[in-house]
Length: 320
Image 1 (cartoon, one colour):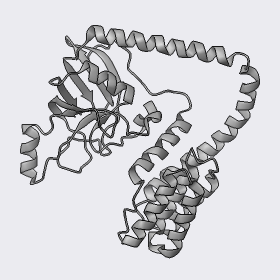
Image 2 (image 1 turned 90 degrees about the vertical axis):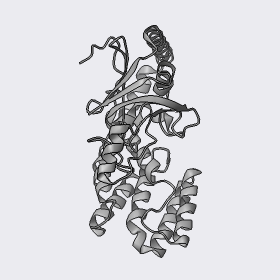
Image 3 (image 1 turned 135 degrees about the vertical axis):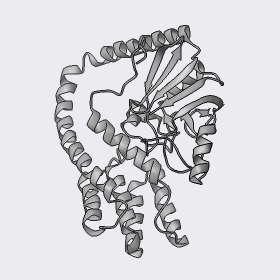
Image 4 (image 1 turned 30 degrees about the vertical axis):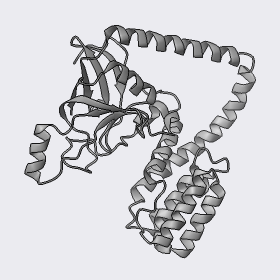
């Protein structure tokens, strides 16, 4: 193992259940927002679009009413509608969120739709929401106590914490610049780590998220796997839908040969990138799930730093 001379960036250890629940909700919305994937009628799609538009504008009650209308008019779309309603009822920015109704939606999918593709995600959502309901009650009680105790010291405490973070960030940036530019990017898939190396030593490390199907090398287009092998950074996109993206030279010759033997297209467009535009506030909690289509994801601040330290032509090694 290469020696670390700089601390690994890790996700926070406090409030994980609540934060991962929020991140999970947002990642689900990124994956399902804006479409009705299992039903293709034009009129039904237009209804879905109207409901999704209402949600995007923050009209959550109107969006739920529209989904109820879809449920009544298109019972065959019921499982998908229930899933979206369940997510909206639990959506963190919905000030009228109702966790009990959210639970009822997901439970109804399990009870009434034995063949639904939404069953697995519904099973995941139910215990998460139950935990959040308990956590919310505890938070309400504890928050009142905290406000009484911290009112006089909160302002100065926040100033000190913010200053400390700024100093730490500056120290990290100075150390990184002293050791950079990176000669190599080493990615360890199993450990979910991306490391910048110079003179054979790691000088910066980041926790990452991978493709939704993370085990094994990428073999073909659409398999949602992250490649394994040796590549380079061959271009970058500052207008990326994921803040900023560094393009990796996948497929290499070995990848192409494997795809030819399998009779498939190897795919491409593999990037090291940030978080989807509009969702940057999720920050480090995005690493709670592997959510990309095969790319390597870090936070927006981290991809900015990596882009500064890893010019085009930098070697990239991706290990299992």
